[in-house]
Image (cartoon, rainbow, N blue to C red; front, side):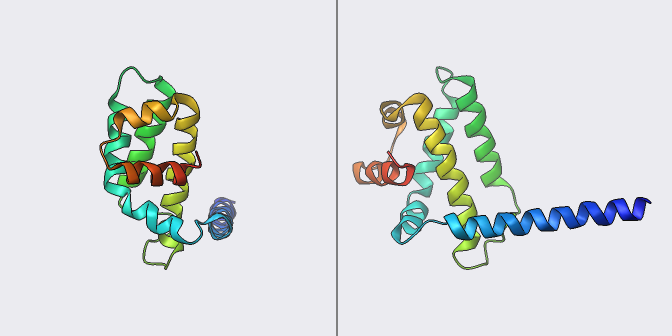
Length: 131
């Protein structure tokens, strides 16, 4: 009985992982969006850290950003980074979803206040975040 349960749980996890992989292939960033996202990474990480540390931000925003930073710092990925395009796409998709959620809550002006990069970088960030 335990053996069947373990096999069922493992099979469910494999099917879920495959579904996630297919979903990432469908929604992966197109064209230069992936390149822009990777180029923005250092400034973006500073922005996320600064907004998450700002006690004037709503608790939900700080929690989401803290979880995002923890996800990005994990030593393993659900989709290994050595796979071309799709390996980094899972990280980009999670970052973009979180950014869009944060922008809807705090607004673009608040992100601009914390942005330490260039104006072109902020314009690219707005493009990536869909605002």
